[in-house]
Length: 158
Image 1 (cartoon, rainbow, N blue to C red):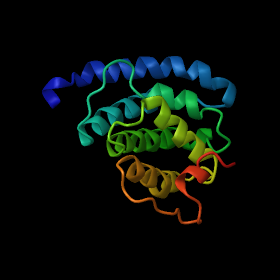
Image 2 (image 1 turned 60 degrees about the horizontal axis):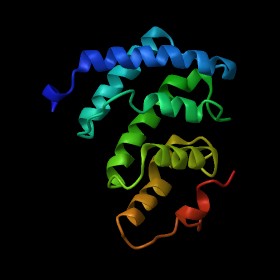
Image 3 (image 1 turned 90 degrees about the vertical axis):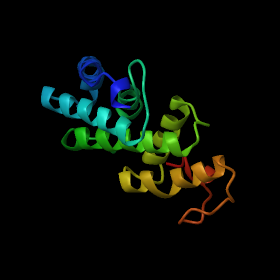
Image 4 (image 1 turned 30 degrees about the vertical axis):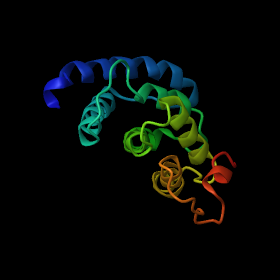
């Protein structure tokens, strides 16, 4: 797979995209340093390798930034770390959903859960609700979430 992915070009494009994102997030008190951009670009390449995915175009990081930039749970001190985790969660669940969700649908579900019952917890986001949704998309038996709510009932509750 490595031969199919021009990692240097992918990382450089990611950094250029992130530089543009800084303008859109400035009003929310969020900005990435050049070092953070490079780290996120490298993590993108690694996450794609880890999940055996190939991306064309701008990738998902820019979409994640725009979707989460106004979250009450996102702050400058944890911005890079949160974006790294959101990116990893996205790629993992993109595979787990069996490609039944578009990128935008998955991001909307992630945002709703993160800002809703997860209350900014990346651990909760990566766990129960997205796993339940993916099981349902694959046709597995419906289960109840840990709080007694089904996955559908818990997504957008704030």
